[in-house]
Each structure stands twice: as structure tokens, then as C-alpha cells.
Length: 367
Image 1 (tube, rainbow, N blue to C red):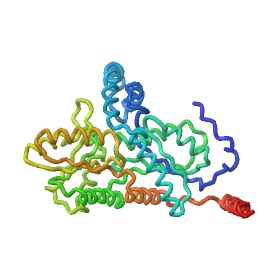
Image 2 (cartoon, rainbow, N blue to C red; image 1 turned 45 degrees about the horizontal axis):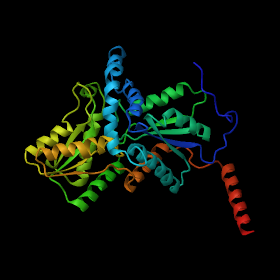
Image 3 (cartoon, rainbow, N blue to C red; image 1 turned 90 degrees about the vertical axis):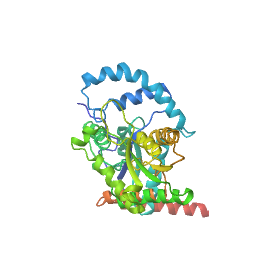
Image 4 (cartoon, rainbow, N blue to C red; image 1 turned 120 degrees about the vertical axis):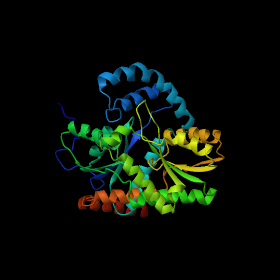
């Protein structure tokens, strides 16, 4: 195996204007455009991941390349087009903004760390952002997934991408990984703040539905903690909001394929509620830290339509955490917790150089 070439300063001390400590904030990914041509390579990468589809390649490859990638890109492109913005993909927009705000919040707290974002599928890739951080002088990198609940299909896949990059890297930085934060007090408080703000503006509906992304049920029986962590998030959030068990429901969305997935499923549950006489629902997606296709199209459009068509009278989608101050504070708290013990200030010589440059600029401005 050949290793990637190191930055030109690898034999000496890298010239860095920060502490050498960095955070890589990782999300799932998005196509570059809402077109079939852009969806095809994105879906091929996503659905080729053995963490996502645990079917032997000899069986899965003919289905993926012979059927799915011939049909699904066009259908998915239409869905993406319905939520695309002038800035591009909502998921990418929110992820980039969260990374920028995280860097600012950490800076205000005295931590001069580099922060970049990456996508597990699509661009910017995890490998390319790790390369960029190394080139900037990072020698310690915290891997922070945008997934509060751990799942082998998501969190572990991010870690796989880091390990694959590491296997091709000669000079490795120190690495740390955040596995989950489904019960982090700041995360729960940020979710509760979103719900309370919605209730203040629109009133409280008959039911609060918490919809999480689904995974095959077999993963639960094989030891994946995702299902349990989703329910713990829901219990903690309900407790913060003062809700009884009868006032909220946990569901799972985004089923793919014919295998049995975690239940109850979101849309059928909404239909059953409407037919049983539930007139209004508030629906939120606690497992998504930023709005994306699964929240804006699948929930705010399709699930809403199904509930109203079945007899429901009012459907209110509560937006994801996105760039809410409570969430960015929680993200900053989480990062600081896992950065503990690592230096987050530039070395003294760098600070002295920066001070001398500031003084020179101030003197020049007076002249």
C-alpha cells in the first residue's frame, strides 16, 4: 500500500495560526444538485456502504446497479428539487453554518481550534477535509458526527471513513471520536426550547410526534443501541416538556426495501391517529440536527398530506435545531467536553508573532 504524501512542512513544525487542535463535524451528505445525474453517483456511494446495506455484495450489486440506480435517481431528484434553495441543499447549508457558528462559539470561550465540516457521502468528503486540516497544521482532531443517537448505519460509517483515510496516511494526527450525545443535557434543552417556542407562537396540538430515522429491525436484535437511544431522547424531552406518555408518540420514518424496519412507522401512525379522531399534531424530528430531505419533503410535505387526507385538521412541523443558539451552545459544550486535555491555544511563539503584527499594523495606521 502506498501512503499519501505529507505536507511540505512535515519534517519541521507546521506553521499554524491556531492551537493545532481541530474539530471535524460530519454529516450524512447530499447530492450536488437536484438532478438524476447528480443523484446517481451520490446514491451509488451511499447504497454501496456495507454499514447501510448489510447484504452480501454478490447479491446486492445486481439489484443496486441493475435496478435501483436506473430508477431511483429520477424519483429522488424530484423530491430534492421540491426542497432545494438558492443556497443549495438545506442539509449542506445548515451543516456548514453549524460548523461556522461552532468555531465562533469556541473562539468566544477562548478555544482557538480549527473547525471544518464534511459529508460521509458526497462533498466535501471526510478524507479531503482531514487532508485540509493536516495541511493547516492540525495535529489533534476531534471527529464529531451530526448524529445524536449512535447507529452502526451512520455513526460507525463516519468512523469507517476516518479509519480508511488513516490507513493511507503516513503521519497520523491524534484522533478522538464522539460516539453519541442522545442524552446530553444541552441537546435535550435545545430540543425543548424549539418545542416551547413553537407552542408559544402556535399553541399546543393534541399530540407531539417525535419521528426518528428508521433502520432495519434486525440491527436492534444484533446489538445496535440506536432504538434504545431514540427512546431515551424522547423520554428525556417529554420530561423536560412535562408531557405524559399519552401526550407524545415515538415513530420511525424513511423505510427502504422490503425488510422489517423499526416500528411504528411515521406516516401510517399519523393516518391511524387522524382516523381515531386526533385533530391536530405537532411533529418534530429530534434525530436530525439540521433540516434536510427527510424532514422537509418526507415529513413537512408528504406526512402532512397523509394526516390531513385521513381526516386530521392541523399538522404543524417543528423545524430541526438548525442554527438555534441553544443548539450551538450545546454543540460547543459537547466539543469542549471531548477536547478536554488537548491544548486549544496557539503556541507562545505564534501568539507573540500575532501580537507583534497587531502592534505593527496599529503603528502603521497612526502614521
